[in-house]
Amino acid sequence: MKEKKIRSKEHLVYIRSLPCIIHDIDDRCNGQPVVAHHLTYISDKGGMGLKTGDNWVLPMCFFHHSVLHNMGEKTFWKTWQIDAEEEARRLWEENNE
Image (spheres, rainbow, N blue to C red):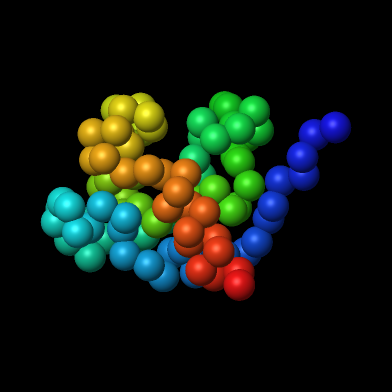
């Protein structure tokens, strides 16, 4: 049986209110708007045109979001030494306690 995707507009609003997850490491964010990036590799629910649940999102400015899509997700997180899954879990728990 497939696991139901979590959808939470409130959590997405919260994520978009945060600074880019890379802003402390790389200052090229320059105050750009933040989007909620859905981790695509996290489960079998990812893929072309399919988003993972809203519990698997991270805040990213337009610049870093574009870089991520150009590099590839796993390479991007490895390059910046960020455990994206752990960060997404932490933000979900922080906002949904």
